[in-house]
Length: 226
Length: 191
Image (cartoon, rainbow over all chains, first blue to last red; front, side):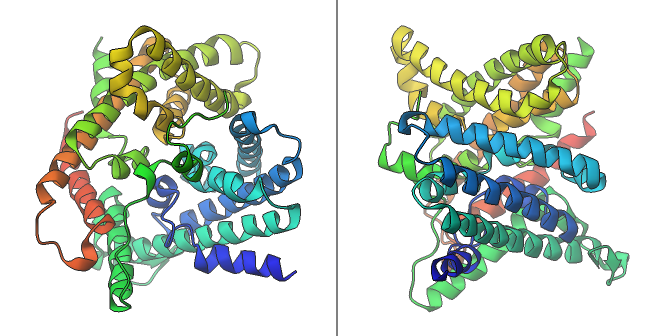
């Protein structure tokens, strides 16, 4: 049981995908226009990540090593399609707000990254909790960015107006604002790291390759299963 | 003809794939250190996205729609793209070693580039015909290349500048991207 709690802690704090690993940039910047959208995207990803980690951990001895990448992609894509149908049926407003970024969860670096580096090597229960932990970490990151941008850009939080609209900085709700908010966030982190005598955060390692980072770093020719 | 031009300008500049839709950010941030590699990446992306738009739109219009299986879009597209990248890599290696030399290293990185799947899905969402899909894909990739080359140029310039310690690395790159994004807003009056 301890291992499961350790996994949750690891995902939410130690290796938080948004703040520490800086993974999954596309949805992080694109859908965080408001707290609700950010949290919705985060929770959707959590569901997919938890299910995919569980299924991949269950099948880890069955899937041949050479075709594991395509197999993972098929599993994740099927789950995403199912989740998309659920959203269309029960939460159509969220589905419209997130639009194309729901199917794009398939290529989210975090999901394939966790499948490759954790779920394919570990038993079911820790993988399940790894998925929940990582997903919640991602949700917290997105909600935080979303809340920040919503307050600055629209003066509201989760739809409730707290600052009169005349005093809002509209650009934070638009595309450039996403870049600026994330830049400021990482700069603050760097400041703290520097004051502790650590080095500043590098750009996403290994040339910023999404997803199969770990694998590709070990194997720079990048041949995935044919 | 006019509609095609509107689609092309719209997806290359007005709705730039990186700067306003946030697709393909990983290579945009990761491979933009030198203009030369950025150009190579851009060329590879142009090639793959154009071919992928063509093939996915054929599959969608002639196989999935007649059989009422549009719900398989995401799964089919991602598999087709992954297979396509492998295939393109093998063909280039055999038939055109010089082109392979130039683009080869970037090709495997493109499978998980969300811009490729994103363009295929946007084509379907807007129910573009095959020609429109190809034009849209090509223009989107041009937009990506323009953005990544400009970014690489700026990063080469600022390499020896005196940037505050805590802004070094990721933050300054994101700030540049934000400023570029503001600049690209200027195109929104075009259409």
